[in-house]
Image 1 (cartoon, one colour):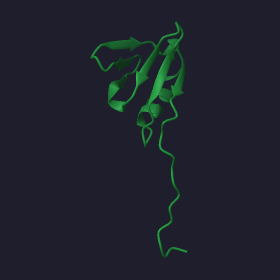
Image 2: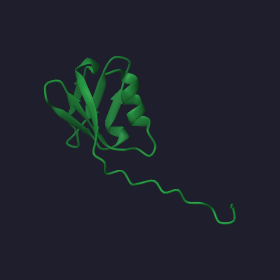
Image 3: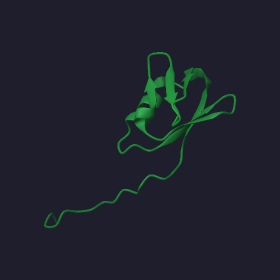
Image 4: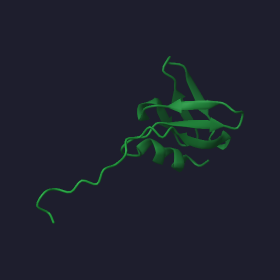
Amino acid sequence: MDLQGIREAVLRRPFESFSIRLADGRSLNVPHPEMVAVGKRRIIVVEPDDTWSVVEPLLIVSLDYDGKRRPRTNRRKRGTD
């Protein structure tokens, strides 16, 4: 996977937590954008227990979203009809 796809996931607003699935079957959770750093050639993911993993982008199989994002509402302002 290219780094731009990871950057887009991290910068998405509102942020939606996701997991990085690796080729060896591991999955790294990213519950908050501050838990991941995207460099020029590597990705660093920090776990809640302060351990961290350095990931080679070529080993990333997919980004999996947990679907817990709040639904958007299309609210109209009063008097704008």
